Amino acid sequence: MAQTEISATTTVREPIRSQAGAPVPTIDWTKYESKTYDELLAAAGTPRAAATELVRHLAGLAPEEVEDLKTTAEVAIQVMGITFTVYSDAGMIDRAWPFDIIPRIIPADEWQRTEAGLAQRVRALNMFIDDLYHEQRIVRDGVFPVELLEESVNFRPQCVGISPPNAVWAHICGSDLVRDGDGTVYVLEDNLRIPSGVSYMLENRNVSKRVLPELFATGRILPVDDYPAQLYDMLASMSPRQDVEPSIVVMTPGVFNSAYFEHAFLAQQMGVELVEGSDLIVGTDDCVYMRTIEGLSRVDVIYRRVDDMFIDPEAFNPDSVLGVRGLLRAWRAGTVALCNAPGAGVADDKVVYAFVPKIIKYYLGEDALIPNVPSYLCMNPKERDYVLANLDKLVVKPANESGGYGMLVGPHASAQKRAEFAELIKANPRNYMAQPTLSLSTTPTLCNGGVEPRHVDLRPFILSSGQDVYVTTGGLTRVALVKGSLVVNSSQGGGSKDTWIISSEDA
Image (cartoon, rainbow, N blue to C red; front, side, top):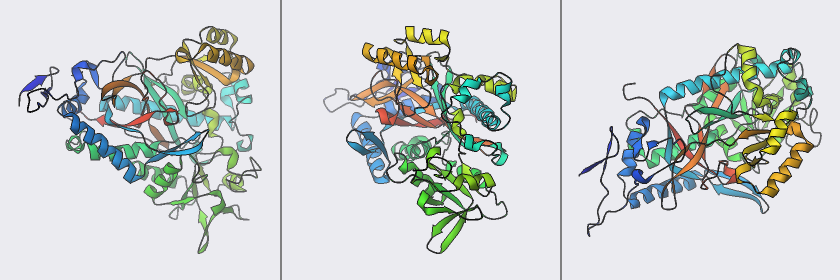
């Protein structure tokens, strides 16, 4: 078959022709154009080196073949039961996971630098959290403002003086990364309370292998399927009883939680019990036990997916029916490990985020390997004035919301919405920070009968045991399916892609 050049390093087949001789359209990369940095193509028709095989393969497919691949993915998602839950005025809606078959690609050498930066960040954040619940040296030395700590909604006085194993509070972290129009990778935020999404990263890979098996045959796509084993090993290393096989459970709020799919998935993958608060009890010996048909069985490690305020009605919200009375007491006594630790959310604050480069410098004596997005803190009068005068150019975020809720994307907001946010900022300046509207990178996405650029971010997951730090090979790529949108959250209409870390051909 004739060949058509699309770059100096790769060629693709010409479009398949019908019996009448008219070309059957394929994915035409020469017409693909992004106005910002694109993850797959350096320019129209020219793939980045790591994306060469993928671009060539997709260009050789007829439209019906592409449609078949989409259908294969959709059927796999239905059969595998991959869902997520959204809350709406109509109540809870269970939806099939939105997945795009064109993966996002990152070269392995670039990923190694990112991996090192994420490990550095989590080490410093764990030192920061431990310091805040003990000596508070960083506050005393004037590096971190005392008023930020005093007004933190996620600082738990109940945790002061507690020393978890290896001084690790955030055992599982999900840090969101974005790439700007010039190709620079930034950390957008850190998720240290109950980060979710890793199950979708793993399931995206399972679906991707069904859709594009030919491209996995080269062995250049680095695997991600060791995460459950890595998670289990990290949790086991936290056990207070190192002389016996640890008893580990995943603690869920129940089937009505939006992330219940993930709770069940991870428990199944690790081969541990999925429990609710009512399944556990704290004994008179301050040990945690699980109710079983054979009687009470001691629990060593709880991977808890229940918010701080609901895990123990004795220590936190007395009206909670989701938690276990006395759980904090057991944790303080050292008879059970809680991952993530209560109180870790003190560093999961979009205002605290602005201080992370200083936190890294203070505890590690190093410059941050991955920069923060430039940020404006509304608690500072000069910066607040700038934000209020430039709401049409900025993204404004509340300190402790998640899932894309409660934020203002200034360039896309109405004048009325910007005016409402101005009043919110004036009323509670500590609760808001702002950032410039980045020209987020794009990646080709199937939509409207063709391929169009859509903005993406990336959430890698980092496991910390105190001795070792493990970073997933890539992470969960989220994509804004609406043209021009910068909001990638699935709860806000976003979708997802598999993330391929590609090793070099001579590796």
